[in-house]
Image 1 (cartoon, one colour):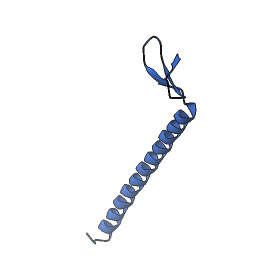
Image 2 (spheres, rainbow, N blue to C red; image 1 turned 30 degrees about the vertical axis):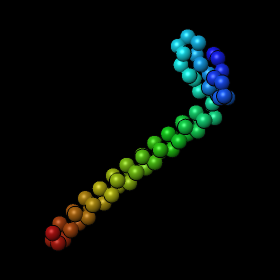
Image 3 (cartoon, one colour; image 1 turned 90 degrees about the vertical axis):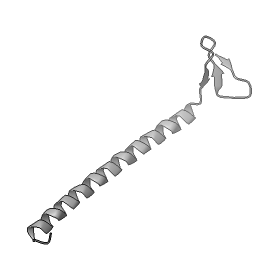
Image 4 (cartoon, rainbow, N blue to C red; image 1 turned 180 degrees about the vertical axis):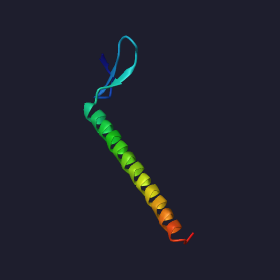
Length: 68
């Protein structure tokens, strides 16, 4: 691979001509941020599910007491 002028982490693949970023720290940070976002999404989905269950149980309770 050939280093791209003016960039410390960019290289050009001689066979394909593609520019390759070899900054492993930036890549690891990116992967870590994806994991955090995925974890947050799972947590939000769990909270939504719990709220739906609470709403269902409240409706059942109100129906038993004849309030609806």
